[in-house]
Amino acid sequence: MTTRNLLQILARRWYVVMVVLIATGLLYATLARHGSYYSEVQVVFVAPGDVALAPFNDQRRVTLVSFASAIESEIHNGRPTNRLAEGAPLFGAGVDQGYQVLMPNRGGQWQYSFPDPVLTVRAVGPDPQWATATVDGLVTHITALVAQRQQSNGVPVVDTIHIEQVPNETTANYVGSSTDARARALVSLILVGLAVAAFLAVTIDRISQKVQPK
Image (cartoon, rainbow, N blue to C red; front, side, top):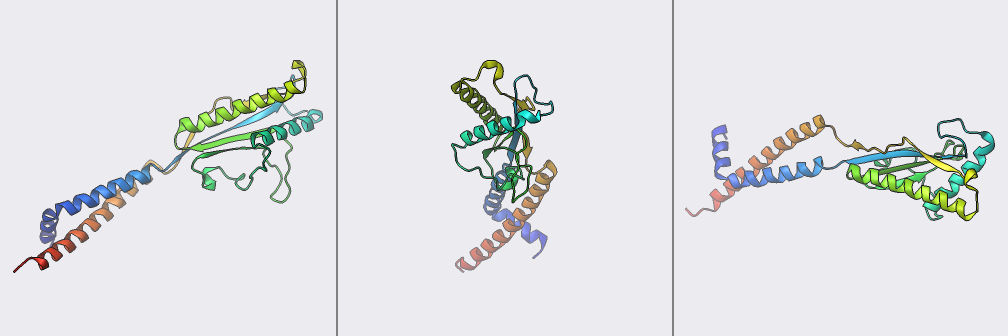
């Protein structure tokens, strides 16, 4: 088959070409939309009179760690914390939309160690607003739990533990394919789409020619 014959068939079966190209465009739009936004902050538990970035006082560390652990347990309603994906970002663990609140484990897989009074708050979602709003909401929830627990125990204001967010501004980063990668994917899909369109157009044209009455 010559190029001229192929072009004539494509022109005659233009509707086949249109259907395949539309399907190709929809497939690309679906793939290009696949991406997530990731946000993470550290919530540091601070003793009265201290600041988050100062070295931890060893005499107060145990108390702060125990308190942070209790707040983590309340966040999860007393259920065991899932640490299977702790070493990787949520999107790296296959989570498209969700959140996680964990005390960072400084030990290994077989023996946990939690020496720092810190909670890692992270979220991954379909848009940056969802990710940052989820993290901010969790930090607000933690702040409320910290205040409620101490108030219920009658801790004087001057002796209350407080929290500080690091960094203090919640941001979200996009996790997905780059512009160059999406451009290459589009070119590849177009080429595949044209090949499929040509094959289907030729096949349909031949079948139509055979079934026509002589």
